[in-house]
Length: 432
Image (cartoon, rainbow, N blue to C red; front, side, top):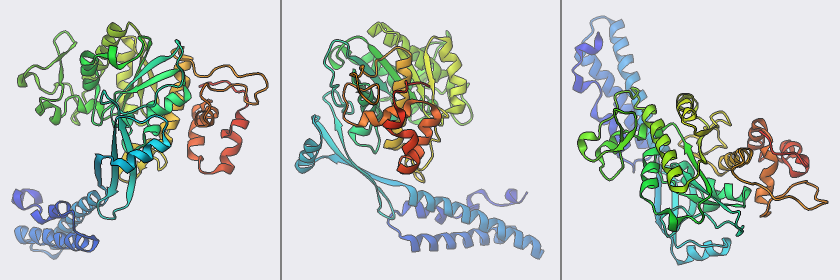
């Protein structure tokens, strides 16, 4: 009832939104503006409502001040938490430093730095390599025999490796554990299943991928079911947009009339039916182009609700799914680049997912993980490219609880020594 008597343009003062716009203001100015905005909003309520009793006047002041404080704090939190990302071409000294620490050097190298706006604290400072096909650089497989299989990775920034070095991305970590596979990183920041289907239809894989026997791994996060029909994709004609036909299939929109959000999307913009159909059509396209049925959809931790609704449709279409929704908490301190401001996965979380994925693909018979070890080895099994990194991950492949434990206690060598060390693993087989 109180809001009806208040003119809509004056519910909140325009100054409440000046804090987020002024990125150069310091903490003192931000707090001062928040206090002033709170007072102004409270006075506006009193002036326009003009309550007669002291109780109503107090409640109106409290209500207006609370709204002003809440919105001001939200704007301040957004300002403090937001990152300023700078991505430029690496100079000669940075390329030389990259060449010293890497065996293979990509054609293009970018220097990517992420800092907090106010504090200036550096969140990540990495060099990102891109190959000649505009893919995130993944080192070539050390195995050169005929049994080498390719693994195409599709997804978004979680697979691309936002804020991570080249050796810490999911395809790179996967390749360390499965050295008989050549991984290719086709993920891009902001991508969704629409981009995957469009790439499968337009790329010339005969020149981009060596071999015709392999696996396609698509990594899903909840944002993908919104990106397939969000406002950006509906307006930007440079982005591929697919719509559901009357027959239940998907078709590429040819004009603005066909760029319409499906009617069965949720109020939050989740278009799960369209997302499932895009994944199914991507699997069909992959089979037709490569003659391989090995298409796997991975649901990244935190995708529980979407996974429960999308997986049945995918399994009905014969698509293999790996539900990692509860593998670990996706928003844990160790699992993100910055737990307060950036939900992108950390290198440690990527290693856990890569280890789990390699173990599951091996159990499916899609890849071969490790070569037989020579007699007398204390571990009982080894990998073909034993550089220490892959071997240290091997003991964590035993179970989901083991993976979570080792990830949580990787910095505490005393707690993790008995369960996560290679010596403790012995000759244990890789199991779920």
